[in-house]
Image (cartoon, helix red, strand yellow):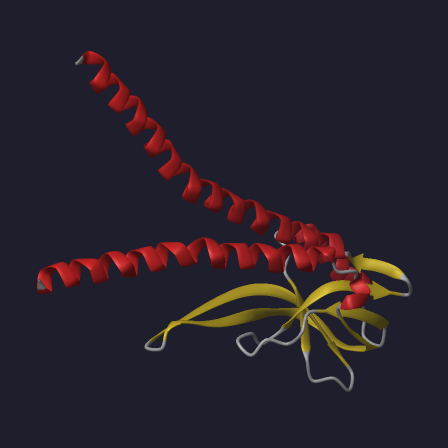
Length: 183
């Protein structure tokens, strides 16, 4: 009897875990679509003169488990405004884009930064759009492209999650028909 209860508890645990996965992925999908649908004016705005422009390491401290903190470091372009203690950062895989932005920005230039809200686990704030003299240096479309990639990955995971059981069900039905057809 105890063995049956333990088995039932294990099945319930796995059903709960596997049932939560699509809910979590669907919620992440909703958040990503929500970010894309926002206009630049829906994000936080900081305007001011540039104090420092350079490169730094963006540190993201995640906690997978309380005993096992996960840290990731990424080299990013940063902008610090005068009278503002925040570092605003931009990540790009294209070195030419870094060089172009770095050559245009100088100290005491007046800029407008559309950015995400500060996150406690990061040492910098993500730039959504950067404007200097009504010229867009970093466009929101770059932010949107990153979200589109995340949406595609999430949709692939959801398709595999629901597709494999359906495939196995169809294959088992075909196999059953073959077995019953031979008898």
